[in-house]
Length: 402
Image 1 (cartoon, helix red, strand yellow):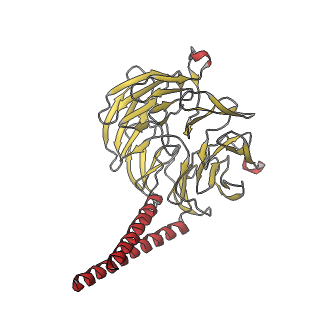
Image 2 (tube, helix red, strand yellow):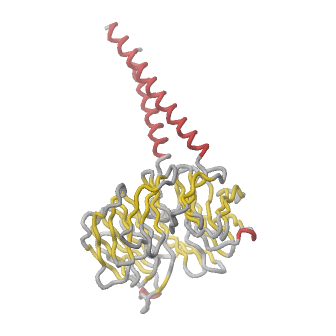
Image 3 (spheres, one colour):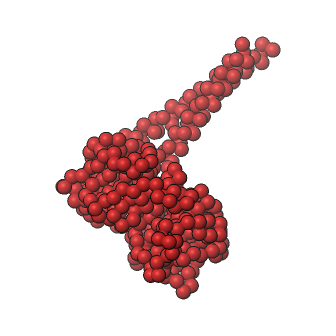
């Protein structure tokens, strides 16, 4: 009988610890790159604020898009600006690095990786802003897209249409590949592969696995694109000309195509759906077949080809003058935030939506859910402590009887 009680309390204790671990994990999500992760999903496990209330504004900071990790917001404003770290809770400046001009960085395991207009990629300590190493691209144009980091390797494009892979520890060159894609065309990393907008490479040695250029030939001149691939469930989802195309991750063959009138945005993928803006609409497509599920559009929002972010079954997307929140299931309008020309990609972390505006770096929401999360955390700790106390009492009782 006593053994059964002992086993029952051990089970309760295990469940409580697991639940508390999940609670901590949910409230500690990061937004490590402009599209959240190496697959460019644009999806966060964090909750989304249910109102548009401002938490803080740092008026002195402008950023292309905020990167968030370990309670810090990393901001770079693009050309001729440095890198600034803000406190996620209140927006105060923690440190600045003014040693160069940065593209949007990525943050992995406490290290920031960013390209500069001087033709270098830097690795920077995220706590102090100190430089760990610099990698110079001798004789090549500067890297303008966000680096990707996986398996102790750093991958990045440059203006001249080359893809570089270097060792994340010591910046040793591992391989390079001529993509013929220029400007800020981004990369995706998944399943040991590196994906460009038109090809897949072996992550280890840069060997080309497939290429969707006609007849397998790359164009003779550099192709300029500002789009970035998204990888999800065996598919690579691409914004190509006036269409969204899903191709097979392993061989590049076309799975489905959704045509638009104008150039669509990059996509966000969550809940088996693809979210994209085009033609003054926010579209929701079925990820399996590309069929339209719903569309949302209002003339007063003055749509751009703005890239959505998704969390908590809600879609956050900037328009010309507003940041808007839409229900991901039925396209119901939830709230908007008037910001004037918000072209920053919104990042969603810890019940906050962060984005850059002409007013500076803005954080909205975050009140109710933080209280709820704190309450859940306290309850979880209390249950664990109570379980341990009861378990000790049972063991002492058993010991006295024996």
